[in-house]
Length: 407
Image 1 (cartoon, rainbow, N blue to C red):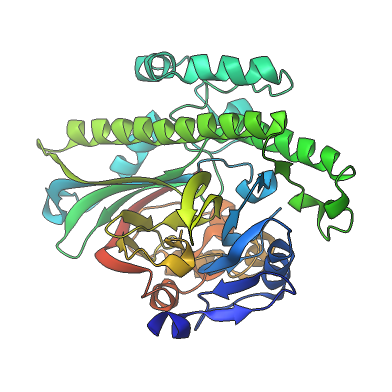
Image 2 (cartoon, one colour):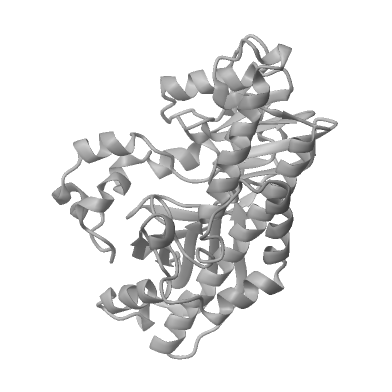
């Protein structure tokens, strides 16, 4: 069967791992993390590893973990609901100016980016679109419930961060597809409040670990879990759902702000029905291999039959709009990007400003030392990643960046 040839089998001593890593790098640290996850007593069927898999904090980035009766908060991580949004416009490359610097500057002016804490949020009061959406979407009411149960989940920037980008690998891009159609694409999550929720419940799971007979020999405390039926489990699922909603709305607001800028600068254009808004750090209840399970996608996109998703490359590399093939062995999932080839520290040591400028030639973006850890060479070859998952997705559109904004 084709699927039997598309992935490698890694044994763990308990559940096995199906890894779509043919032709791409699987580092030793990620392999050990995957094996540790697969040994957990509540893993359902197997663990799936996507071709962008790499070592992560808590759990392996690029992993899909199906569990019965338990959930690992650190596997979901602290950037809960992090994901992508992309929208095609009726514009073409001909309508874009030769100098894209002013467009980049105008977008940066209306979407706060970079910084930590309050520095990464709105500094002069919330725009109406943010405050209105926070109240009317149910986010405000939902947060009161979450914090009412767990007052230690406190982050003063929960509303101040809505509609903001953040830093690291989060970005806003203007792209062109194979027909030179203009797209807007962005990547962000639940910002400071998602981080606060994640860290709080990771610690709650660790506190419970000593009382679990099956967890006393756990090789990594980051894999501490919450069991279904426990109040913390119920509260965590509720909080995660809230953070995932926050992340989705966060992306929607940023998209509206970017399109607002573009409508002011260019002749009237339309946005089309080809739009995607998908998480790639999240948990959901699904049915796989005859069982109702909790699926944690840590750096992975759901790819059910016919479902659209986004697989971005790095700065200066290609990105893809894809359609899922519904591959059961991957728990109907695909990669969430190219995947890091080296750590941020290693990238800063390995690349010069000249390297970065050459790698991002033709892209209007930052060319300073602050983004060298995001330079294309720090990531896996996106073509190799896509080739390794040919049985997971079909490519619908291939995009190339012409503007890239990072924090």
